[in-house]
Length: 620
Image (cartoon, rainbow, N blue to C red; front, side):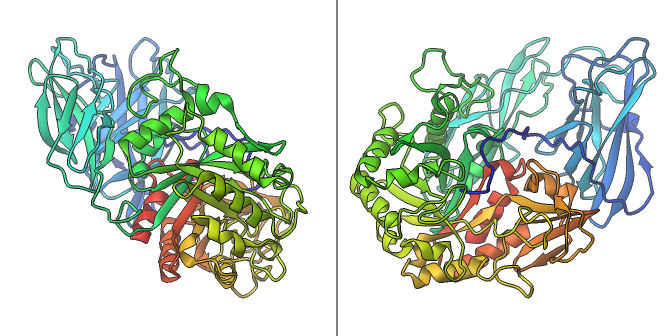
């Protein structure tokens, strides 16, 4: 599913770490909190000797603010690392951070040093900052487990956090939770199991089955350890759970709409991240990308990532480490575990993509043999239960992508007919297709209308209309929902593409609207509105391409046009979708009777899955 130059990318991804500071300054009032007076949290096993952490609010604006923590070594020996913990009221959150890795479990926030700023000589100090929303102040500050004012707490230490609970055996009304043990210097007595922040059970073991739940409902679980003198430690990581049933349709929200995401086998994230972000409870389908197309056959894309790589207990969906001799590992095994925990999710194996579409021309010369090879691979006994069908990402039939194809207009219909004949009526068969709605463009080059009778749906790639491959501009949004005055090319927008497919006889319910979880941008731009000149692609994860999760703070949106957002910051100009514009697009998709939406790809979203959530909410 194209964005061009997609193979191969590796980027770090999970915590809130930003090297490029993006700070909105709207004043210079500073608030120094007397941390010695803060309410203390239970301390982990090791305490920091002779060190302090102080907090200042550098500025605030409307509903947000900039905060800063300063860690100082007040002792006589070197401090080798630091961890600052605090609590915020539920209405106050960290939205981006720099010079530290900042994570949270509910309202409890933890900041850890980066590799370059953890060592502090006696008398030295280091600061890290963050942007936040809300108006609350931090409480319960701890530095390496001790009070942030440098005092120590004698006596029994509180327990550590248990492992993040793994969910399994999910039904309409129950879920089984399992976690790894906490540690304590005097011993752990029991564990409080919390559902949505409220204790629902106290158990002595490492597992609990919560019953009496409501079908088709979202819950969040954490676990807190208690020691022999009833001190409680920090909460575990949160595990989102959605019970089965109750939906009445494809979408977990009950709308019957599809919410599909591409999961790439080269991404810097794991299947477990779909759980911890909350995205697993919001999606209906996953396209696993990519398998290759070579010598007229479907072939494995990356054996190591696909089914050989071992995962630790911490990395695994269910909290169980891979054994060295188990028959299936890698992403395939993690997807199997995900489907066990979220039975509503269907997984398709996607073949081709921008880089690997060159083999389709040979494959379609004998579509029956090609379909047989794909079926044999997808239904391999080692992983047949993982996949519910196949997705073909041919870029583009009888047209040009990275390479040009001359197989003729009937090629897409012939291929899909052979695929349906082999995979039968019970497997899903889909295709990612062009959104070029121009007259005589790619949609007119192949018989998408004729092929539609064989497929379950088309993923219409309604993004990448414009970008810095036109290095001098004009700047234009890469994913416009509609046309607008001054658009650089006729037919390059979602509405025109969908209208053309409908006119070709494709049912609206077989069309999914595409959302890119990234932006396209130029540099050397002086004009804020679209249509300006540029000197080349802006710097990003690739030239002219950057994840939404980065752009939302490094270059916040400054305007909207044609149902999508754009941003002008310094000399850079970016366009991308935000939760608000996603909501607009989902409302439009529903008004058009579309089957739902899909997105490229999970790695571009925030750690809490805000774009996936926006699609899910918008389709309800």
